[in-house]
Image (cartoon, rainbow, N blue to C red; front, side, top):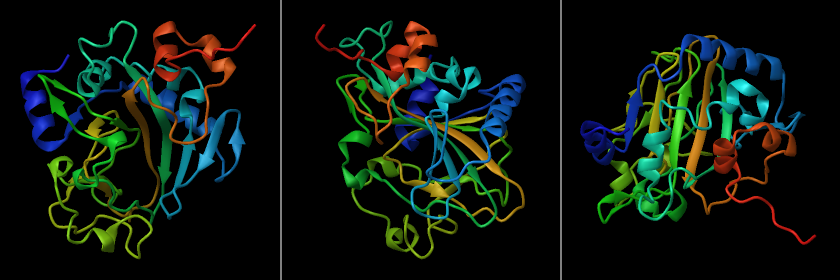
Length: 270
């Protein structure tokens, strides 16, 4: 559940850091699952997992990662965050939580090496409905809640996620946004005024509303930064990209998990 303290600081800052959300055993299985999928390149498929980038030198994304096996499927409704996600996406009194008001519109593993980063993006000033932050009539109604899970330790020089606390409520773009945004000459958030580096231990999870301005520091250390991101929104949403849940995954998911990845079963005559 969501505590009074968590409610206050999520509203104020736009994020929560969930310590030890994943166990050591879960981390071993998730990292082994990623090892089994690699090597991959952007545009390649391994089963129903797709290699992808956003167009900068931000590393490799393994899209539709919940198709990668049982270790990834259990993240769909993981007890460390699912009740918090339901609360912040909202819908209490309108949706039955037992049947799920949620939909995952994107889920991916990100593997990033030395020199790689992702630029500053989002912010409350954009007013994007899909990612909006809203509190109304005694409840949250956020368009998209991200859960970012650290699969490796992410400390100094490791390319940590960076956010600007409170920017989910901002009315103006950051003065240096153009310089450090995605697809710019310096697409990373190092030294952006007001940005905070969120260092994480393997197993920690960062929960944040997507309209919080965020990006990452540039990784300078050797080795890999590995994370997984699940993006939750209301059940009436649609996939960000053109992916669809495979019949094989749909057949093996629990009803609760299937409801989140495919809120409505396909309907056709006959």
